[in-house]
Length: 341
Image (cartoon, rainbow, N blue to C red; front, side, top):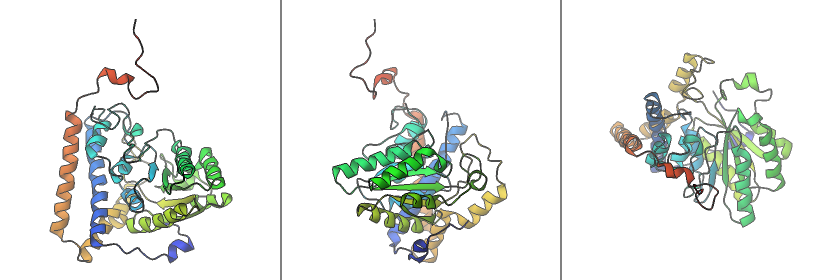
């Protein structure tokens, strides 16, 4: 599944990265993959309730863009958000404990995957309403422009959300005010369960920015270095006061829309072909091996380290106590708990 690229994207050279950087991207993508696999297991055991949207297959998107980000930059996304949390440095223990509804979670077990935040890591959710995060992302960028800093906001949403009216409204306002926001369309081809070809008459989502004068491009979302390179172009535009910018990142999710989705709208052969020929993690793995940057033993060691981190997070999420009932009255817009008779 090759991406649809602009001339600028085609002309851009693959960024030079060190062996250590390449290993770091491999490690970060592998952490997301293993974490999500474990989350799927816990869901199957009944330890995670409600919805659970896994990021398996899309790891290169957020890892590549985080590689282009700087301290203080913000990010906001939809409900397929565990990968974004891990990529920006949130503790796997706190993320997993929130998924299991425990006190040790980032929202003290009250929010689940769709309502998890970290002020320290500048992560503003996790939003369950389709495209609701897009105007929020524009608002975060407006605050940075108002404050006069050079921060950038990464606003992630999917191909299904790209047709929402509030996306167009956000584009218009962002361009009117030259907001430092990067609109990241994670095009995984199937939205909630309908292919882009069936749901959208003009599938080149990034080109819609032209109606508002917004620059943009499509990029191969299964290549972490290509994503990083495109991210750096978008960030440079925004920091120079020339934002907003649209990145349509062509990616693919291996699982269904959520854990309850059997994904019968595509064939097993299609998914298997993507895994075998286009997997982002395997691509970096081969680069490390063929480039002499790492041996099989080195990569096995990394894999073991990641599995240990994920297993530790899973144990923490099971052992952490459930939130006390008094937590019902914390973190809300009120001066004090309600008075009882």
